[in-house]
Image (cartoon, rainbow, N blue to C red; front, side):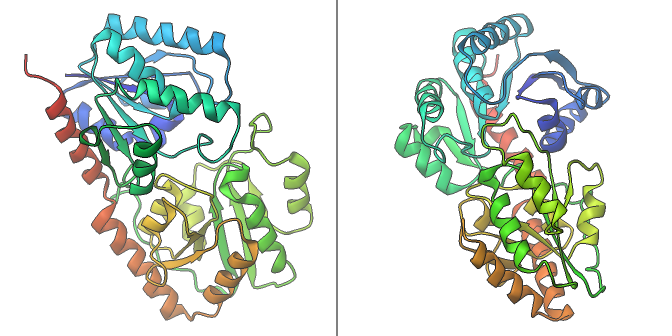
Length: 369
């Protein structure tokens, strides 16, 4: 079988789909990746996949570039004739679905989050919603990463329920992300791993961190890409101010996420909405308590009082209150939250669950020759 992975970056495939790709490769299937070139292209090629450069503008709306991508994708589908295409991210989902219909290639979409389609009102969100309505009529199957997103799409896009399902995110490799002991040092280290954009709640995180700025026993770190060209990025001035005032430590990029999680006491994510956040899954798999917004996606991974605490979305004071609650816990209580985090991902978010769901869906939609 030939399987095509369609995404807006090779980074997406490398970070979130590694287990799924290797599953097909180990089975003897041929895997092709259709994505723009980036710093992770060589990494995925080393796995043994065939990579085809497929330029796609991840954000924004440029009709000329998007039409060029559509035509390129159609040409590849007609030439390569994959047995099934698995698409990820908004534009890849939309255009792969459209192309799949006209090239007779079954397409399985993965809606990993709503992005700005439902979070931000405006022309781009309206266009994306209309394109979803058109494209998803052609998709063979659509996976969501939480029930809230599925219900919202069923309402706005009018999906056929028999063609939709819910995955436990992208799953987590429990053999790679192993539990580690919570540090016993006096300084309590909170860690947020996220792109530096408004919808991830970075402003609320910084505002909450500012409350504890003069307390030596509390430390807040933000790890994630800053892209000043992103339409929803915070300003460079804001970020620099947070750092210069000692409110947060900022690390723009790290290939040692496991080390950073090991050094932390809790993972924080004040996002406005998620699919199933990978950073929370990684933190939980490594045995860390979680603090997150009480929103779709986050509340699937964070069970309030069991493996962490939920706070109100867009509310820095609520974050402060839950940080105080965490600081009041003793080591035994924090360790229990940590143990519960690992238990939760073992039971519900093992990537083997995701792989099995893809396998069963592919068997259903591909007709025997």
